[in-house]
Amino acid sequence: MILYALRRLGTGLVLAVLVTLIVYLLLSSSFGSIVHGIVGPAASPETIAERTADMGLDRPILVQYLDWLAHAVRGEFGVSYFTSEPVGQAVSSRLSVTMSIVIVALLTTALVSVALGVLAATHSGPIDRFAQAFSLTGTLVPNLLLAIGLVFVLAIELKLLPATGYTQFSEDPGRWAAAITIPVIVLVIHGIANLTAQVRGAMIDELRKDYIRTLRTRGISTRSVVLRHALRNAAGPALTVLSMEFIAMFGGALIIENVFALPGFGSFAFTAALQGDVPVIMGITLFAVALVVGVNLTVDLVNGWLNPKARIH
Image (tube, rainbow, N blue to C red; front, side, top):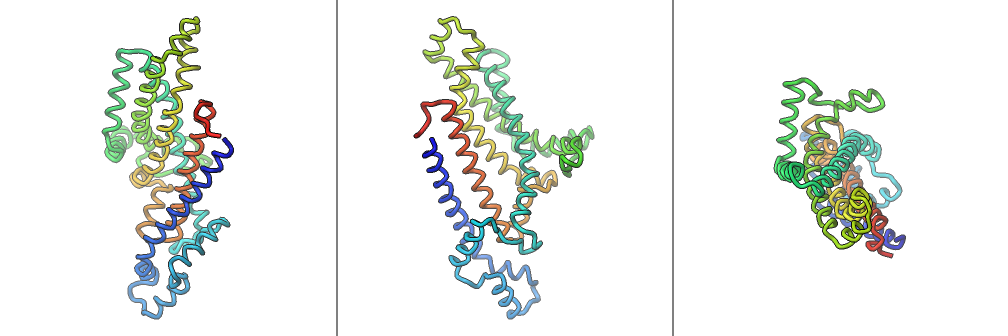
C-alpha cells in the first residue's frame, strides 16, 4: 500500500508539471495584451518594452516556466500583477471560503445519500420510487437555474436568507450559516441525486450475492447484514462517486460564487482569468491539480482499507 501511494504521488507530480506547463504555454500567447492592460493603452513602445523586461516576459517561454516551477517548489508563487498580493496568501484566503461551502455540502450529501440509498435498496415501494424520482430530477435541473430559483423564493419572496454576501465563521457563526445555506442546497441537490442512485444500485447488487444469503441463514440480523457487510462492500463505488462529486462541487464554485457574490476560489479564478493575471492563474491551476490528486489518492487508500482485496501492494 505504501509503495502504491508513493507511485500515485509520483504520478500526481508529473500531472501537475504537465498541466501547469500546458496552461503556461496557452497563457504565453496573451503576454503582450497583458502588459498593455497593465501599463495602459497610451503607453509608449519603450514603456511597454521596459515593463515586459521587468516582468521577465521577454525571456524564452520554457525559461520562464522553469523559473516559475523552481519558485513554486519552494512555496513561492509570485505576486498578482494587478494587486501585488502574494499568490499563495490570496489563494489560501479565498480557498477557505470555497471549502467551507463544499465541505458542508459534501458531508450533507454523503449522510443523506447513504441513508436514502440504503432505505431505497431495502424497502421497495414509496421510498424506492421517491429515491429514483429524486435522482432523475436532481440531475436534470441546472445549478444556475436552481440557484436563481432558490434566491427568488428563499431570499426575495420569503426573506429567510440573504441573497448575497459572506460572513466568516469566526466573526458570526449564525450569519455564516445563513450566507452559505442557499449555495449548499444548490450543490447538495445535484450531489444527492447522483450519489443516492449509486448507493442504491450498489446495495441492491450486494444484497443479491450468495454471501448475503449465507449470512442470513446463519441467523445474523438484517441490520448487521445490511450495515456491517453489504454497505461496507458497496462503499467502494460510492466513495468513487463521492470523490467525483467533491471535484464537481469545487468546480461548480465558479458559477455559485459569482451568483451569490461570495469572495471564494471560483470568483477569484474568474476575475484572474478575465484580467490575464498569470501568477494567480498558475497558482490556482497548481492548487486545483493538487486537490484533485489528493482527493483521488485518499479515496483509493480508503477503498483499500474497506476492501482488502482492492489493495495494491
